[in-house]
Image (cartoon, rainbow, N blue to C red; front, side):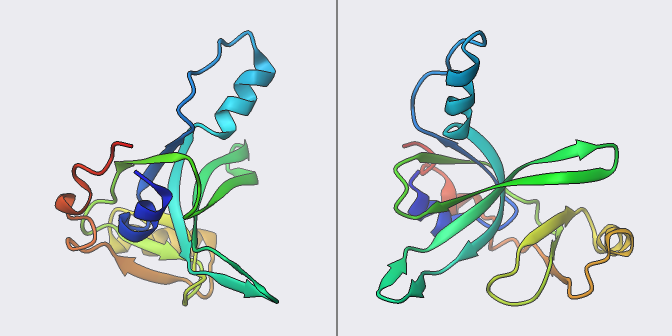
Length: 158
């Protein structure tokens, strides 16, 4: 599936894998493996943004995936996000869609909002918000229309 189809069809909260199609190098080749992992991994879709204009340049629409959190115990020191333009030459695949009825928690309202958590219910979402404190958070329930399997079936292959 192309980056453009991910941007158009995948609902926020989906788990997306990306690949450049090359085989994984053996573990003993640490540098080659690290380079391969930057072009072959997976993450949760947390944001979609339209094109941006700066001067005479207009960037293509893009989406951001949350790949990992680094830290210890309950402290996140670093979040790893990957942003891809719809013109990316990588291959993408939807591995998992958010379940109908789950609650997405966005950090703020508006088109630049970013998904910060996906909760099982409104109650668990509100409890999560009480612990993590996003004062401008927006809660949004995942609807059946967004995750309908027929939107993406047959389009997960390259």
